[in-house]
Image 1 (cartoon, rainbow, N blue to C red):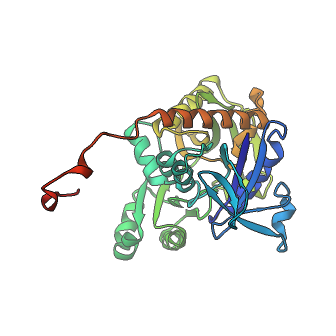
Image 2 (tube, rainbow, N blue to C red):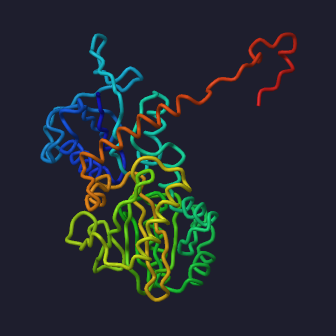
Length: 364
């Protein structure tokens, strides 16, 4: 079976995706699959090369890369007589808006190539924090109260924004709506910081989300793959929220499994499964939670539809290691593709044979 591992992309999480891609390449079973590593550079060109399973390859500037095309027939080098290598399934290891948010899902769907991540709708919803929270609220899934604004709002009604935000009282958290890995997030203590944080957030995104900051809370993660939930992890940081540096560049403490009551553990797992089903997710996702320790209230914070490292470490406590998790993802991607292809894709119609009244025919 030919398995393409696609990673990189023109996103602010480009480097994190490289790390996930390398982890996949080092964990996938080499005797089960013929693996085709494909690097998506920051110009969104599909590239092949040597030693993509090593981080040093991407630290250097002299690596020889060759552009390829991905078609319904498979991977093909540029050139009239180049050999085509068929693709049976794609492991999508990209992160961030522009790749994870449904773009690659749509691309592979059009090509009829099975892929391991969410489809276009779920990926788009999961990437956009504002839309995601609105849908969760509709399904009565608890989230923190929030306000949202676009760039036009910021240009035309700054005073109104300040008044609305201050109904929360400071501190508040300002987030770009479509970014991940805590990029662009700011803790705000007053009006001056609020305007600076909004100005910065709009450099990354066209919409922003603002939430009140909990005074005392704990952070938990739980991953879901179809009907399977991982163990619950607690993440402990010295900062007021989990920063990019906490996630990827520091010694943030991870307690797995989390030291919590059975009732809270079950509540987290059930909510994680409900979120997964609400947005009709596919593949593996990680749902992040905030627990208000003053009021004993659990909130869904956000979802990562393609989590860093594919959240493999959250399943190890349940005896599922990375190579087996990849096996499950590949199998489910192929199953999902099979079921999708069984749906009716045509409808009998005489629209193109309509005679005599073409000039009056209105096309909607």
